[in-house]
Image 1 (cartoon, one colour):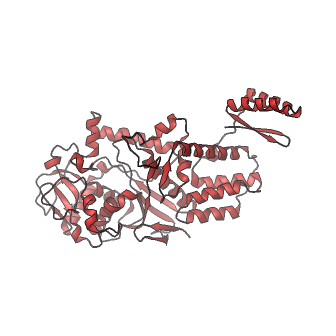
Image 2 (tube, one colour):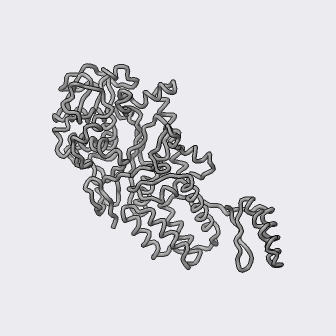
Image 3 (tube, one colour):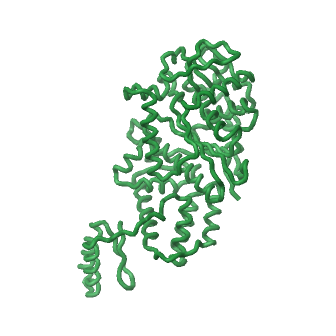
Length: 466
């Protein structure tokens, strides 16, 4: 029985999908104005592990992960400029080219990390009509009002506005309006914009659309959507008024996801999401990631240091999605070593066909059914590999588990040992037979310098790549 920690109810609940064996799943995707750092990529890998776990348990998953290419404002300190516009100025380009550039970079990164492609990958700029439709519904139902600068959602009209976060609204005010233009006509500081007019601080906005709303005084037709509105519109189009799972970072709980719930449920009159999943942050050397400190690493930097992207995936698997994880280069080295050891185990198994061990499979399923406990599932795998099962059964079992891990163990090719290394290994075998231990140690060192490890066995030796 699959149980999920639901942020909305603050309890671990049995999972029941809206449709039998089908899961509707929305994940907040990246704002494509910059290369994504490994903290963002951790969120993508964690969602991928959950999707793979659901599929392993027999569900068909319809994952929708969006691209935000308009409307995501920066902080009040830079007067709430759109991040895409900010990037366009920084790179002397236009928002469309910026989006295309960083979508390509992101797609390359998630491919390197072996994340499955989502069912749908909608762009915000391609769904303006859907967003405008929700805004009109909110206006018609009395949940939204217009000023000269924007159309706002009136949080006082929505009961249980802070149900997801559990916060006192007065403590939520400073974040709820973050990024909005200063507007003296807002009714309440926590009211959030669902649509910005091309006016005031946004009079020179680079991305706007001609939309005329009914039943309000509208200063101009041109405008652009609020960031929170985008996820509501795109998820509704592809997954319907109510979905099974919505996932995002814990930082989205008090504002972005709280606002998504309010505007979606106000517009449709239906429950928006049944299960809310939130992944915790990745820190670096025990501190928050920082561009200024040079610790907001991206995947290219990981690869430049000689690490396999799948070592980073393995590293992410070592912590539960609801737990914080601390990145260090030593920890990544440990993950790379563990991954290499796992690969060597698989490569050294005989090609004989084995069977999946039922006992270990049951333990594995129990782990992923417990709120997707991948660290425990990984521990079960190593327990199985160290057991006295026949090698053929170990191989069949670990390849079955890898449907969840996504480490591509079935694609491993046997390592061809260079002739020079083989000659050194044979010479070392002769030295050991003559009990020339000094020579034996010297030859082992030469083998290791060439990037291989030699392990002594009863009837000879075994060579494998480091």
